[in-house]
Length: 221
Image (cartoon, helix red, strand yellow):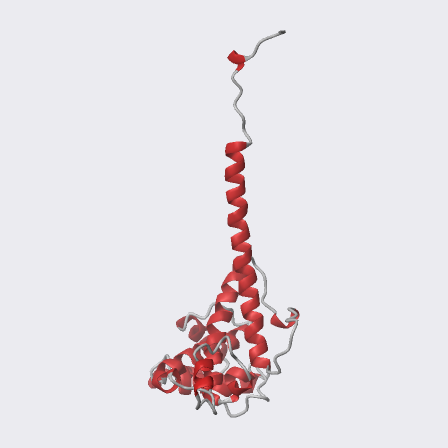
């Protein structure tokens, strides 16, 4: 589930990474801090690098607090995904000039230039280039974070694999982007429906509460 972001960060084994393996997980955290996040000064990374220490979990928990990770140490998959998202954003910030003008291979004629003007509308297989995938990874990180904020408000877990997309683009990364966009769109529609309902109630409060003037009433003819 982390392969896309790991590949974008040039991790040595993106397909085989197993966060449940304690040794591999600890080495991964050290690599992420040393190479990508770099929140601590080099001289302050000793406790985190000492992966065989019994106190390593405490050092890692402190590290999570220092980088403002919203998850608990027991929520390992969520923590890894959040840290990867942070690393992707920092990597983009360090190399903004490299990625901001990147275009897919083959975009050399007028038609492709126009097409690339709206990359999120015209996503296709050409996104297989590393620069395009980095941009898409960054987009997914921000939108997925936004989706998690929406879902956390209602106490609902986000499990993209349980949401049927209804179509297949042939690319798992683009499929995930479409799923995130669809869920966010549904949330926007719900907010719109709530506002419409509130407007209807406000109008009904005015027109559905007639005032009767008893002085105008009379008995008989």
